[in-house]
Amino acid sequence: MRELKWATIALATLTALSGCHSTYKQVDTGSAESSGIHLDGARSILIAVPQDGRFEGTTYPGSGLVVARATATQFLRHTQKVDIAAPEVQDRDALLEAARKFGAGYLAISTITKWEPRNTRWSGRPSTATVSMAIVDVPTGLDIKSATLDGESHSGIGVGSSPERLLPHLIGDFLNGLY
Image 1 (cartoon, rainbow, N blue to C red):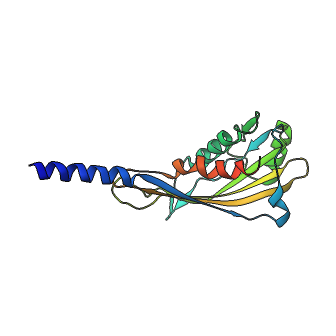
Image 2 (image 1 turned 90 degrees about the vertical axis):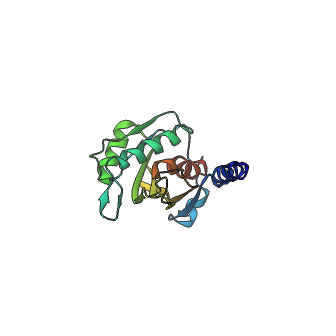
Image 3 (image 1 turned 180 degrees about the vertical axis):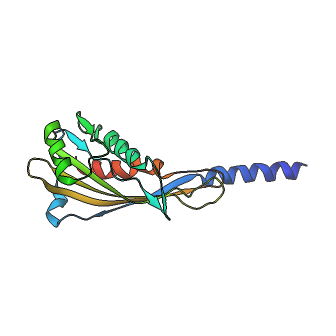
């Protein structure tokens, strides 16, 4: 009986220590001169709502709005005026027009290229999220910084995760490097 108790404690400890961690990668897709860009915290920003993410033929409704809200939350750490565009506004010119009406200095346009919610509590398979993001200077309409942001969860046994949980770190790290 005593051996069973110690085996149970050892298993619980291993499970707790295996914990949950994630890996993140950022690949800059802009020009070489965009590496020294620093955004002005006094300028406001409009966030575009990307199309919902897909994986293996399944669309994940609401994932585009989740990405837009996570982006807005991370921008609010650096600037005081942030708004999210209407989800039906997808065309770049229409987004720029909306940003100008809002008085935004920047426009953030994201595309969900991978949305893979696979890490159930027992599968051990990682969830992934890949988001391409461009920061546009509204007055000129030019991209001033763009990158592909990739995150993957690695959870221990019995611990679930989702692409949503990857977004704060994924987007936050990218924006922290711009301010």
